[in-house]
Image (cartoon, rainbow, N blue to C red; front, side):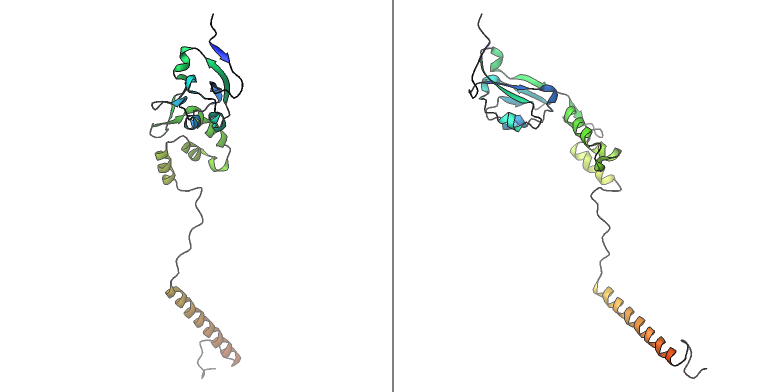
Length: 198
């Protein structure tokens, strides 16, 4: 009976990529890094597939994976399935809780929400719910909120030259009034009395 695969030494240009599917969030960064197209996505749904005959064991997928769930196995496969793309991981898309649009994957959205639920910026319903909205609904939801997490203090009122001139005139009147009151007090007069009155 012929063997289905032959093991090869480390660094050989043939082999397969193994993915720890439960830890994979289908971010598809490995697909973008693969120079030969051995790893492929699906335009219609969140899916990752792999064709062993195209893999050159360069390791770019392993280095790019943020979840660190990819491993390389140098070998030469004789199976017919090695020449076609085989599904490695597939998930249902996550649907926006506001409009129902499909975006992302359930595992990635829920993982982000779980990690950020204790963060002060996401404490509370509305902020955490935005993580489960598509890019369009997220912007609309933020615009509808009365408060914004990045909002600064109210801006000061704009002052014009006229405001400064009025302020100077008021200060002059106040100073003259104080000087006049001091002068009258020195003469023994009360403010509001005529000079000829007792």
